[in-house]
Image (cartoon, rainbow, N blue to C red; front, side):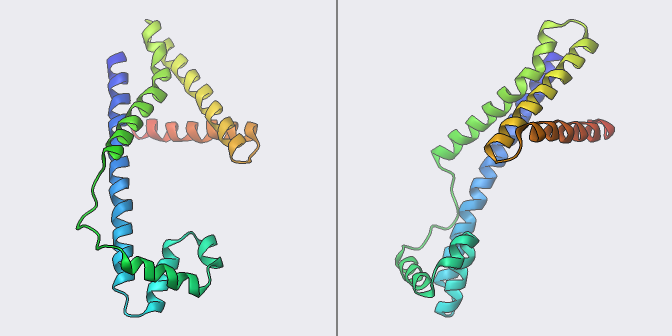
Length: 172
């Protein structure tokens, strides 16, 4: 059971790292497509709309058309982007870091299986560790996002418990 739990943690770490790499490619590809759309726009107004759409709405709403036109002109002067988005060494390091973070963040849930020989008791202890971790993560999330920390912690436990219940009901 311990080997299975560790293997599962590692597998999800690899999945998280892989999805991170896909997100990086998608982000870079979207930027290349936006730049090409701006450069190939039939008129300056269309290009300015593409620039405004690429910006955060709060920023786009305060930029006057003159600033958007200046941005358009500067973007026209950039060299043509390469054919396809590429991953950098930093992306691969980030994916490895995310894989390790995912593995290490779930490792405390496995600890009871290391120290308890009774699988049923270890599973119950593992649930307790997971609930404490959910509460702590929710509490910190609430604190840093301006929510009431205790309410956020309890909400995280409730949502996490509901998700686990759905996973178990579906055979997970």
